[in-house]
Image (spheres, rainbow, N blue to C red):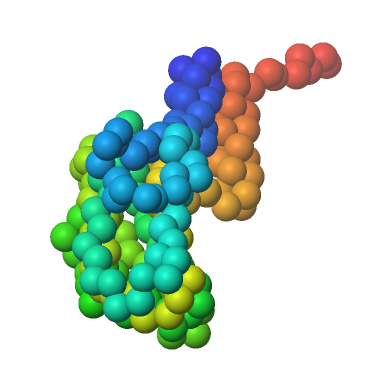
Length: 178
């Protein structure tokens, strides 16, 4: 019976075990566009801003390079532009994959690859005075946590274990006196 309860306890603890690891990221020194304002450069979220001022029609190609501490994390980035139509982006790539544009929120978003080094490349031109964009990259947990087993399974398992314990007992006979 002890073996069964030890195995049962190990199975339960294995089902609830899960590492919640999130990568820490940082921009590589000297590998961001000149004039960028790095607002957060460590942790699971990093961000930067770039303002064009009165440079109308300025063509730009900006590269943001950053590293992470965990290649198994899922990386997500988004680019916001202010005002919404102040910049004409011709290409936005995250780890050489194009980012998608949501016309309702005016936000570009995309997922990165599972590596330690990452690159976000922005190309386009400023078309309104005072235009700016902000860039945010996030790292989330690598492997998703296992799906929890419903309570009914645990109750059924404990009932089975109890029945197995009852059936293994030796019957105690009553002494009949005549």
